[in-house]
Image (cartoon, rainbow over all chains, first blue to last red; front, side, top):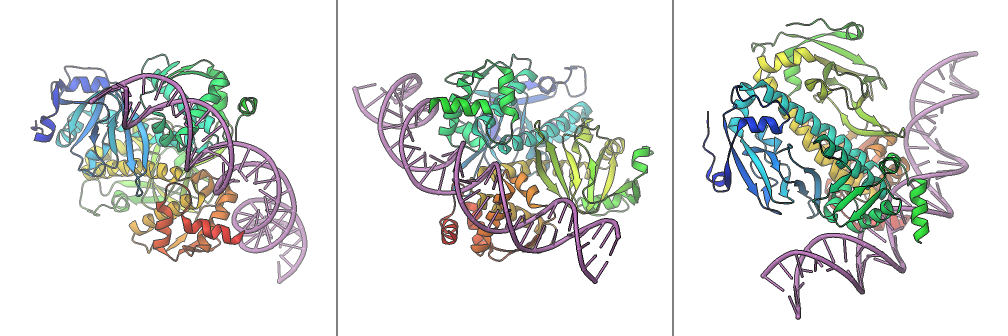
Length: 255
Length: 255
DNA sequence: CGTAGGGTTGACAGCTTTCAAGAAGTGTGG
DNA sequence: CCACACTTCTTGAAAGCTGTCAACCCTACG
């Protein structure tokens, strides 16, 4: 059942890891005695700004982020780059592999990153051989589907600061889910990426950052965001329509 | 393995169907001799405007739409109703059931509808017993994940007419995927639902309809939409930033 | 040292939101 | 069958926010 990786994968392989490591990354008990635990899994190192896979290409493997961050993007008919989401440690990329469809989006590394490579054939074999893995896969899918709802929530908010505040809240939650503090966000993506993700112009992101900063919600140093007032940030994120009264005041004071 | 449905389900049951019917709805060959083909499947009839399930409730079953249309909605912290999507014949609802999570959104019938009920325990059993069913489920998940990308595309467009045009294009594609003509769209949802789905005010939907109508892309009669110029509609849907020149002209002529 | 890319800020035009009112369709009860 | 109430849809006008264009600062890098 062990498959030799195709030449394209082997040439960039950065070593091998055991399947047990994959299970750990998926948040499962690392039962090294379980079936398939010793199954060798290929790894790839992707340099910053390099693509892991490209939209439209045949999906030969699914990837599990071991370290680093990726953005998934889709290029519109008129050449506009739409950011669909960001993936960090423990998240899956390339789910199309499971059903033999081509990749629906590209994945680009935002920093030097490491991924585990789950080849298509192995994927099916492991899913049947290791029920816990299958469950984890289903859980990851459901989480991603719920994330789609979160995205709608982001776009639903009309005011720019509200969208940005919701983005920070979601990122903070993601950090905390990984056991980190959640008060400090180190953004790996550019303002332009955030803008594309939130459906705004990148200049608007700058301005919205200024507003949230003036509100006392966050302090901004380049790409380091510190959430100084969780309550205020949450309050700002809560209002769906228009701006929050305080935010309007903060804007008025500058003008 | 056959499970008695809980009383809550039994009380609204609208009959039973065979598992082969489920397979057919999922686009699989109706191999009545296959394992599990005779497995009885409960059905429910949902009246217009009634909920199939509610956000936050424990997910006891997954549902396959046999007839009718549903909208999936999530209520924001401030009470605003966000429409996440629409589901028609052959589409799945309540995927959280697979992993034992509560429903992340509510599903409301837009017209009198029928669904097949796939109870949680049965789901797991069938997935293992019938590989083709498992594959179909994975395929449905991947499709839904790709649909999340389409949604980002919708929200990404800045101009209201462009969003609406993309919505029509997607709806038309969905009709055609079901073997229908795709030129006539019978909208089951209100303007307000479309507005929520597209992240716009419902008044803006009315105005955007007027623009597309004046452009000759579509003709509007209440909730009946006829696509009169597929090319022009696609052209309008294509431009990501701002309005198309023709659309701007159409708006200018009125004023 | 010069270039390139990322980030910030300003000014203006343009589009959407909001508030408001009216028209049109739907359903119920007498 | 009609009248009434109710919801949906449409249209108008003003205010406000974002997009765009532009200039500028800063850092990284060759």
